[in-house]
Image 1 (cartoon, one colour):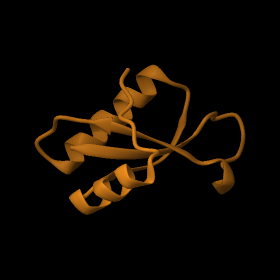
Image 2 (image 1 turned 60 degrees about the vertical axis):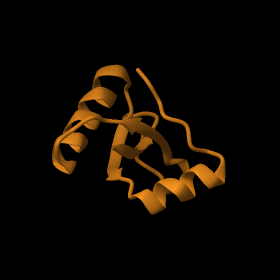
Image 3 (image 1 turned 180 degrees about the vertical axis):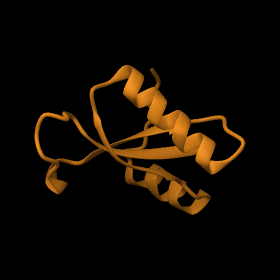
Length: 76
């Protein structure tokens, strides 16, 4: 399952919508909730990012992300 993680690069400043970034993770989980938990754990272990939201992408949403040209799965 592909998850899109919205984040701020630092926890030091107040979040600003204009500075929100995203990355994509390929998580092997049995349920959506388990995938979200694993995604959060991976991000917290490997970065100092302030996680705003974690979204499971549907097939249609994944196709759209690939078409926009910004889709790239992040690996840690």
